[in-house]
Amino acid sequence: MGKNDTGGIDKQIPGAEYIEIPDFHEKTITVHGGDGTEGYRFVLKGTGAGTFDFTLKSPDHAHNSADTVKHLAVPVTPLTETSVLLDESKDYALRIDNDGDGIVDEQRQPDSVVTQAVDLSPPAKVTDLSVTSVTSGTATLTFTAPGDDDNAGTAQYYDIRYAKMPITEDNWKDAMPLEQMPAPQAAGSTETATATGLDAGTTYYFALEARDETLQSSELSNIATVTTTIPSLTWSKQRVYWASWADYTNRHLSIDYKMGNTGTSSVLSATVQASICNPGTVYAVTLLPYVVGDINPEASKTVTLKYYVPTNVGSFTTTTYATCSDDAGRTYWFPGPI
Image (cartoon, rainbow, N blue to C red; front, side, top):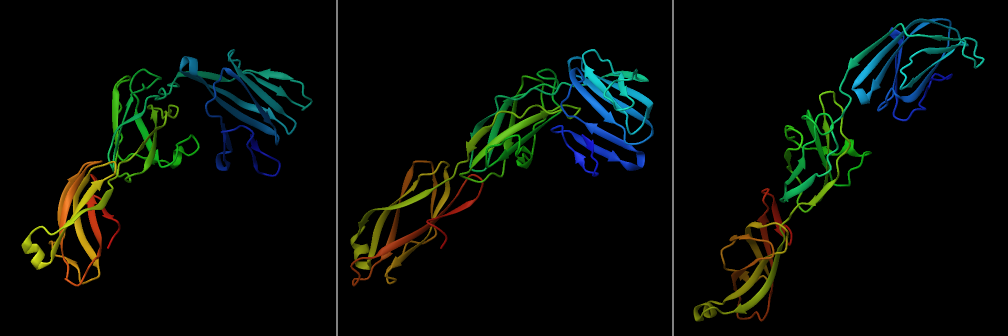
């Protein structure tokens, strides 16, 4: 990986990064997720005559340490090819082929090797993320806290996200973060988080990563999914009758309707807003809006409306409009807005 003959960058190492700072004559290659004991081989080819400094930072995850290796003022020509092998031996010698014939002419030992203790253990993957309760606008999540180092200690913070499509490693960055993240507790504790501002009657997918104080991330958790609740009003005619002799003489016809809730959340403050008749000489005499009240899922209430019906009208139709709210305070019209 590095600059090619045309000035572009060859990216032959998946996920690696190449950074060049011309003013400081520095070039940096970063291979993410690597371990200095796994057998990496780095090759550097000369592009000019002079000397160069080579610094290598090599992590050792098994021992939570990292070595900083420096080779200073290494002679180089356009024919020079040098390499260093990273394995368990931690032999950081530069193998130098001075004339490009493929034969190592000399091995140069580092000018310095400094070993430092570092945190190389990310938090453990969360595998029990689940949705424990849901409303029309919220979802409550629980999971077992991982540690700072695998399943030990306390993570630094959580990144919990949700989307309307299944979350993967590829689209994780596009998912929406929760507005409020819980402060991590010690490994093994039960954590709770709540997603708010969700759309009603919508399927959501949730996932999380835990991070430690060095910003190392756990693997993406299992995916939890839930569909938020939503109210749904139904309206049907049950009975048509004259409730009394006075109503008959005044031409006030009673109709019993059944207002039901076939949704997944409670109907709040159900209200009959209007009942429009055809022909227009028939009209509701019951004072509207008429508040029916709350209706639980799969329950119903009887609503009686009275209509003035002239003697010359033998039949008529009604279209009744109603509203209700969900537990997030959103208003719904049935069968639709007037």
